[in-house]
Image 1 (cartoon, one colour):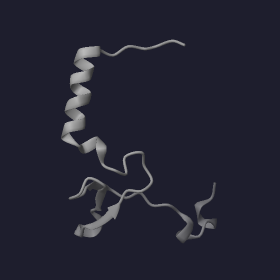
Image 2 (cartoon, one colour):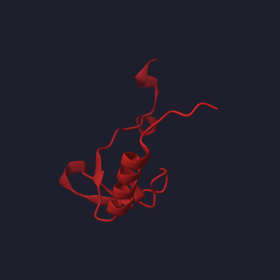
Image 3 (cartoon, helix red, strand yellow):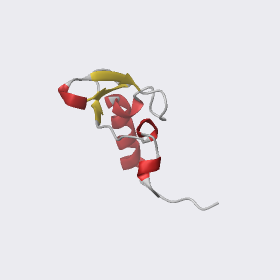
Image 4 (spheres, one colour):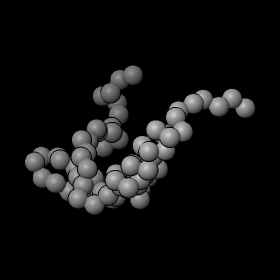
Amino acid sequence: MNLKKIPSNRIRKLRTLSLGKEEYTFCDLKHGSSIELIDLCSNDYFGLSRDIDIINAAYNLTLKEGLRIRKF
C-alpha cells in the first residue's frame, strides 16, 4: 500500500483521550489543551462503568456468586 497516493485528510490519526470531569465525557489532550468530548458511540455513554455504586454492587455479586462459564 502506497501512502503517498492517499490524501492526507483521509488518513486517520490516533488521539489520546483521558477521563473527563463528567461520567460521559473524555478530554482530548492534544497540544496541551483540553477539549471535552461527549461519548455517544460506546456501550458506556451513560458513564455507568465509573459509577462507584455499580462497581461495588458488581464486586459484591462476584464475591457472592463467583465467576463461572455457562454452557448452553
